[in-house]
Length: 186
Image 1 (cartoon, helix red, strand yellow):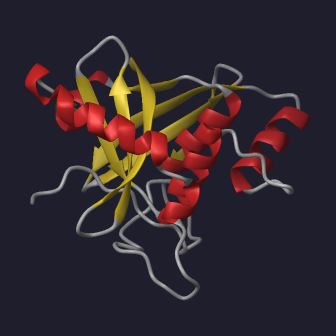
Image 2: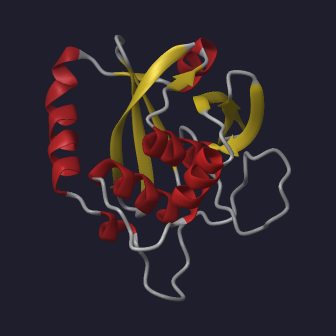
């Protein structure tokens, strides 16, 4: 397993699909995960330290975990199947619960939990950035410094690109979850 850092979220053009970008700690690979607008907002809020007047879903889950006396000890991005990333939440060092990768990342940011990825997953979906591409990474970081969570909110009734493309939570039947895609052909 390799530890990942969350660089931030951005919107891919021209599809306007949000992406969370993770980077291998002490490595060269980046892991882009396409996510929904609500999840992008949740991740951006956590990175910016925004505390809503009432808890949002990920804040509520963190509060439930804390109040029940449990600890989220690790978040794992474990697989990529048919363009969908799968994640696991590890509680108290041993209990494993399947989760969408975007929800797992948003929760990890709120709890200060490490995000890990399987080496084989990084081999498959990770993107190595060469030294001559550092300018692009720096521009992305500059973009992240100026983006706000509101950039990912949609107008009422507006559908998200790619909505309903899958759910890596392992069979949950809520039907409202957006899938999180992996690498795509241009």
